Amino acid sequence: ILTEQTPSVEHLVFAFGWLAAIAALWFSLSNTYIFYGIRPTLSAGFGQVDFASRMAQQRRMYSALGGLTTTVSLRTDTGSDIGFMTRFHLIRVWRDGSILFVVLLIFLFIVPSFFTTASADSATATSQGSMQIMTLPIAILAINWSYYERGNLWVVVTSGKSVVNYFRGMMMAFAILVMGVGGLLVILLQYSTGLGFRVEDLTLPIISPIAASVAATAMLTRVTILPSAFSPMILVVLIVTIIAGFGGGFAVQSLIAASPDILGEASKAVELVVIAVVLAVLGEALVGKLAKGFRL
Image (cartoon, rainbow, N blue to C red; front, side, top):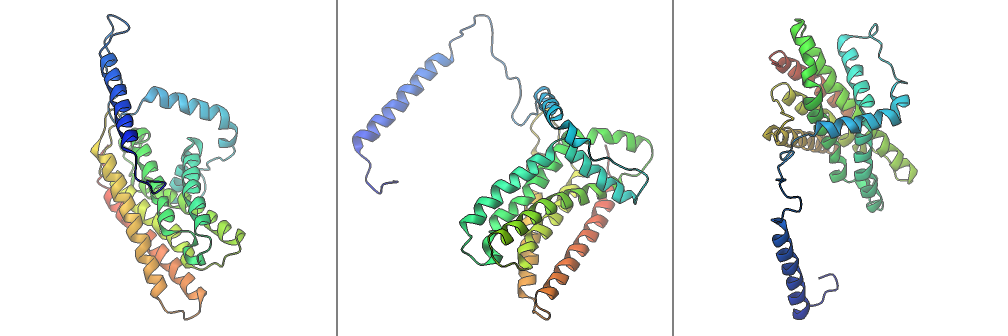
């Protein structure tokens, strides 16, 4: 296929014969007990989290990056409740090492796609498909929170305090984290390669994370993901978060592209900021309403 030639019949027969021989050998040895008296059992089910390996991974990360994670502290005497919880979740993601995953995932998807489309105009240089990957880290962060942090909310729940601001802060933290990483990377790539820059280039990096964060946080107030076995809720959170990010990003991008250039780029920038603020406010209202019915 690669050389645009018809494959040789002899080569195909040899390949299938070789694979059949390997399969027959594997089948004959798979039922052989090398260590007599020991019967193999499944140590983990599909989708199950191995907490022992997870703890070992965290210990290695803390030992290597512990000095960096403690450089950022959390002040409890300044700011509003939502601001405090936003800073809390940002520092939590920073200290548990999730920030490395977010940065690496966005970098690996955006940078290669950017240079493969570098000859395109500035609005499409960072391809839409790669930009939408920024919704995936939010889904992963949401699933990780359900695995490792959800159980810690018993302190807040049993104290009689509301968890509304906790979830509102988490929504804002997810959006700010991914927007900051993705938006900064887009700006650096656009200017470093000498391509022009337009407001449309920041539409997806700003709107998609906000929409995805609203969807992911809203889901966390209603679903429970069990870490001991595969949970269908994992797929639900992934699908809903990604679809919300895709839909929100493309809808706003189309709206801004079709809007009249009354003041040039300035008018579109103002429109983008207004839409982002309105979406964030409505998202906080929705998350807050759903969080009131949260049950641990």
